[in-house]
Image 1 (cartoon, rainbow, N blue to C red):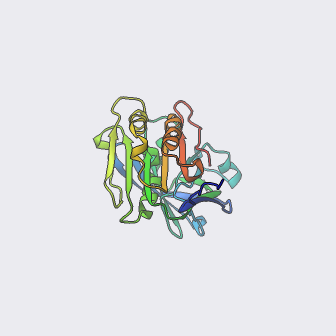
Image 2: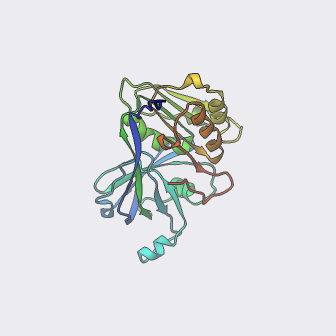
Image 3: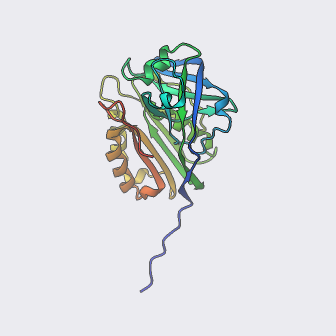
Length: 258
């Protein structure tokens, strides 16, 4: 009996290690893009050589409560993980989803004075798409917008693609440079992730966008189970997709798996 022919995927996800460096930077600009969304610019000579090859990369930001005398004190400060958005020789842009005044990162992003110093660690590694998917599905909440922005930049203009983002209301929709229109879901007063979960649960096997589709799903931790269930319905190997809980309700120090 002959063995069935297994079609090789048109792409694969490949992990690449990076040199882990710790940098000290200063806040030099802030822009309120939406009521609950802030972009900041960090600057400093330590950023020379900074790189983030993967759209879903994570770096760790360290937020001291006051001046620090050395790197060891900075590393001891509370920290959170974020996706680098844009960067140059001596600057780095980061976007923050702001939910009230809880935690350490969001209040800093909103209220820290220009010149305030924080630390940047990483990224320690990247997950890269090697090859070309024939379709794209990018799904997330506010915390995934930086990664979705970066993935959207790589989309071929003629490739089938869907970008679906959950926010609280229409006031929280922001402009994203992409070759397809963004589909916005509004959860209003429902729990974070509820609109995305309903959207994913409603997708059937017939909705699969292509034979070699790349799927990215990231939001509150509850998204992982319905995200993986979608991969099963679409017969997409876990190794060819990224499904992550970027944050976890009630756990301020939770960070996404790398």
